[in-house]
Image (spheres, rainbow, N blue to C red):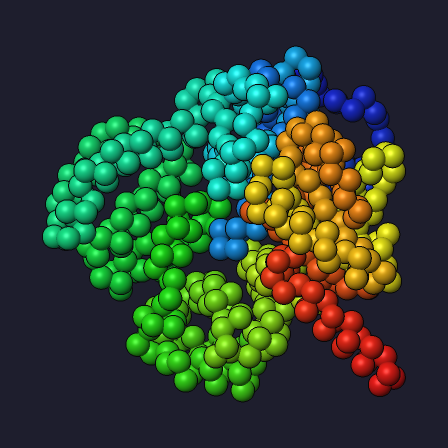
Amino acid sequence: MLANWGHKRSNNPTGFTFQKKSVKFFSKYMKGTLIALLLLASIVTSAGNFEIRMNGTFPGAEGQVIRLMQYHDQITYREKEIAVATIDQQGEFELSFNTYQAGYFFFRIDHARMGIFLEPGKIYHLEFEPVDFSSLDDSRNPYLDPWYFSFDVIKPVPSLDYHIEKLEDVFHDFLMNNFAAIHRSRNRKALEDFRLLTDSLFGDVENEYFQDYYRYKFAYYYRVANLDNFENMTRKYILNQPVLYHNTQYMNFFNTVFDTYIFAGSRQISKHDLEHTVNRVGNYHALMDTLGKDTVLRNEVIRELVMLKALKDMHGDPDYRRSNVEQILAYASQYSKFPPHRNLASNILHQKKYLKQRSEAPAIVLKDADNQEVKIPDDFQGKYVYLGFWAAWCETCLRDFVALDEIYPEFKNDFTFIQVSTDRHKSIYDAFIENQQYPWKNLHFDGNFKLLDAYRVRNLPTYVLIDRQGKIISYPARGPGENLVTFFRWLLFEEERRNRGQ
């Protein structure tokens, strides 16, 4: 819609007079100008409608980094950062970004993650419950027992997030008391009676994302309780329906329906067909044709999405040639007719190759005790890098230090040993290092949780072995007490043998 600029109409709004022969030119000129203005107005209006603005308060989290994340897709769940801010000294923060669709997002603060459903064109105000970060217990393993910081959406009210949270609460109470019996006896009426109740509670929520979420929430439980057959479910909820890539419940239902479908559920596709097409032919079009034998997969969008999901499972399966799986995925990532599928194929390839042998080691930068930058692995080209992540509360890490101290003298000329502390409070790290004085390079992660994400640190200790050219040898690598000496000696022996062969 064009903005109302407050101008009054007149018989000659331009104020110009011109000769008759100029009318045609001027008409073309004005038409082009009007189109340009309409396009500009459309862009401005669209940008405003697609922007999400968020502000909030988080007492006690002053100085903490708050990151808003989203999944690239709902099959690989590869994470991407959407917006980032530092909570100021008043405990306040602001975030803004553009998005074209409502969907699920999540905050990352420290080791914690908290989910929220957001809609484009909305302004949100959040209030987190106060937390004293200085008193958080570092002996609690945040990877096994992650933090959660509670918050309320103060504005808008009610929000999409509010409606979904209420629906989940109602579902949780019902399922805790009834689902086992429904699944055991296939009592369809009990679930339908429950749906009549939820219809009365949520029937007036006029939000497209919520309505789809609601519909596929029930579809999912009809499926897992075996209350309807596969053909009916796919015909009603999948075939000839739009693919709702950003709706978490649609994709939850889709993933459940097609989890192992082409491997074990399809009557028209045999394992021999799949192995022949992937291993012998190794061609995108041939695999699409093979899957097209199944009448359920006649829809090209659904067929390709199911194919990509299957290729994700084939990669690493010894029954399928990995290079051919990657070749088909690479083709789909470039030439699929459907942009979300190109994105998904790229994400599968990234997921399957990331931190794998011979892949590039992620580059990270930390500060040493002299406040000098240490670039890993770039600063250590020409030597192997044995990189470890640890914390003072981790007993296994401390035992590994004893073993590492024995290994270090033999390999210090060929290997750089770097240990990165993930202790939340740097004072704990400082005290530990001052008392121990280990000979290898010790660094602190300095609250950089992106660094931990880069190396997928999900438990401690975590070790990574990087070659002389900055490529991954093994991740996760052996710990110091796991025949590491034998492995290091073998690496050096093989290297010397190759060099003699040259």
